[in-house]
Length: 268
Image (spheres, rainbow, N blue to C red):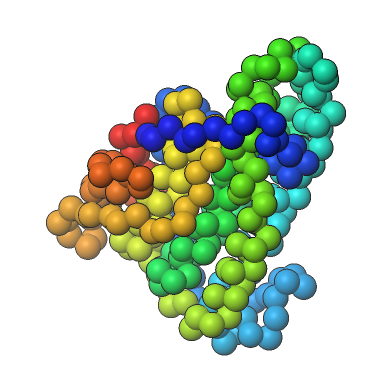
């Protein structure tokens, strides 16, 4: 994966920066449920327009994104308290808060089959959350660490841009959803469901692969080229553009009734 350029530690704003990741190739498992326009608003974030537009299918995602954002800000506050003049002291409470920033609940609430005009702002918000969470990926161990260790402060700065843009990006999701017709039902085995799983895994790896630690936000939809398998195939392969380069990343997506689409990208 492309190495994300780091911001200087001087630009760090921990209260607004907010990782769990692996340094090995990873997979995303997604169980995609059919989405329909009849999704019922369950919180005050919904409005009467949800029954006549795509907003109804995104109420759960919007609420989940706000909840993850709150957990990210809480973890950032604890990290602020861990930073001392020459050291960073990480305790169990901070580790628990960082682990709670896992953005997978938001990913699980994203419906498949969205038109590109709606899919992009939704994936932008999701990548905001992933970038911020990945920026904290080194706060998983109790101990006292040197303040000048890049993994602890340099990585945190990578999440600052996503934290600053989150509110506006989430507002764009609501605005776009309210001007988009209700979503049609999509089968969990469909290519649309597989595509969403591939895009979600790509966002995860761009922020967590190898020595990455946040800093990548989706602002365009990378092109995907699929194989010529039958529409009913439960194993699909293809490639997705490696944004910022001229290359492409190969992937394999496999479906099972229990776990949905599991995606492996040959990226790390």
